[in-house]
Image (spheres, rainbow, N blue to C red):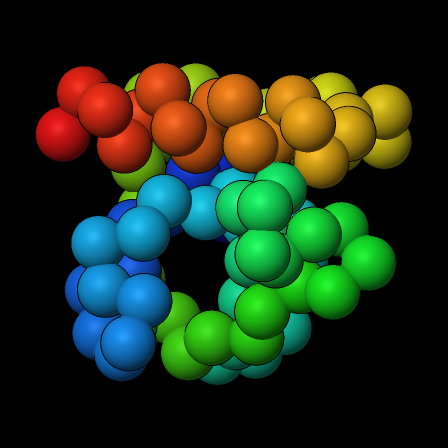
Length: 80
């Protein structure tokens, strides 16, 4: 799941698009490049997200910036 985009389907951030940067057991670590940056990711239960498998950013995770993540998430959010 790391490197995929996901929608939040529960919580105060419902319908927000995130990039999954880390996966642990039943939790994932999410960033949106705006509020949740690479230095301050959000931990969320896997049950509360819907994975979007449109594009895999796993190869770019090592060099991706918050600004790029913000642009990607914004573009996906506008399509919805």
